[in-house]
Image 1 (cartoon, one colour):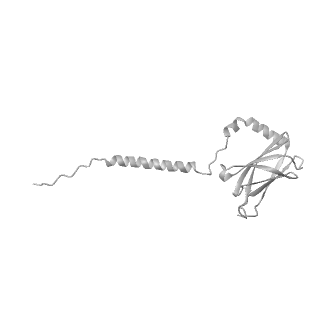
Image 2 (tube, helix red, strand yellow):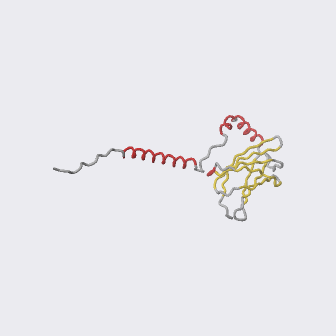
Image 3 (tube, one colour):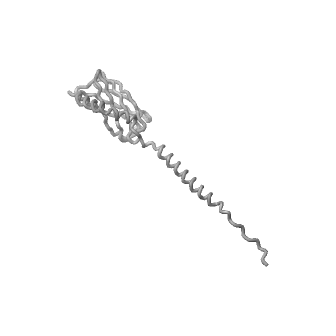
Length: 171
């Protein structure tokens, strides 16, 4: 007779572990993807876009006012002379007849298109003969959008321009 003991039966407890392991790894992958999506600095949403859409008629009226005024703004960048220094943004405000406009309050919302969530709010100071300037952290090269608001007496003028900033020579 054979006195060998029969082999022990497998109870199958490893199958639930495999299922929970697969579900857990799927959740881990989901959390990693969520982290990547939420921490991407290139993704941007227009701030306060709902209020802007509700005030669309005001935007159309401002465009008509801009056309009636006929003002223009010409921007230029003054490169820094030392490493780590900020660029100077200069602009000249010109009326419909081509004459410089003085005595205006100019504010700018500026952002690099590559990092539209990082917005700068700049106030320009008058430099004479229709020129205004400010210094800001405009070190990132590439395409920038400048949203300008000019208040001069009872008149308000708005402008949106794109400028290309070259790589700084000083740093």
